[in-house]
Length: 222
Image 1 (spheres, one colour):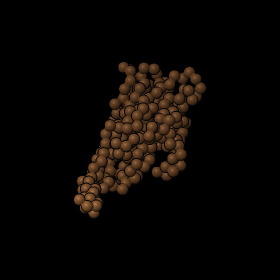
Image 2 (cartoon, rainbow, N blue to C red):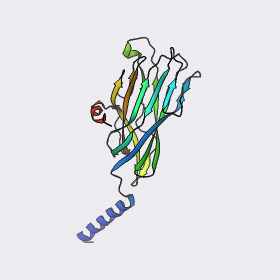
Image 3 (cartoon, helix red, strand yellow):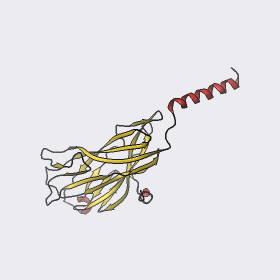
Image 4 (cartoon, rainbow, N blue to C red):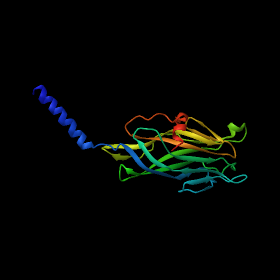
């Protein structure tokens, strides 16, 4: 086989592979929503709002008890680009020992118009750390812990499988602070933080979770 014939064969093979895989959409477009499911805790755990976007746990002393809420957003982002997929709000109430929850799953749903036909849930385990009130204000702050970056589910488009990777937190408001993959809220205070993610190929490495404070200003308009 001469050189020109070899080049033609390689070109035809590449075009065949591209034809099989198909082009991926230029951007992901749709909406996000979220609910809280699968709480865990001691035998005396008290919860309300399981299966909804507003979840509370523990017996408040005094009321109200601690709570989380998730607010979804419109999604319009290129692949492999950090974006805000919603806002997590947290109230840190004083909770009677033995009535607390230790964890809950945040189930984020993406309903997409591009790529079409995608309606996929992504579950993220949230550790609920109920700190003893025996120190200064920061020490007494309860917090939410994201122990992992990748959910176990994905959707397929263009011959590839994609998932919504959690990268960290964006802008913060209210009485709290961020530390790597932890969202701390001071006692009897409320705070909200953007959740930053990325639609990424499941075969690609994902950065360790961390605070993405530098993105806060740019994402505030979202």
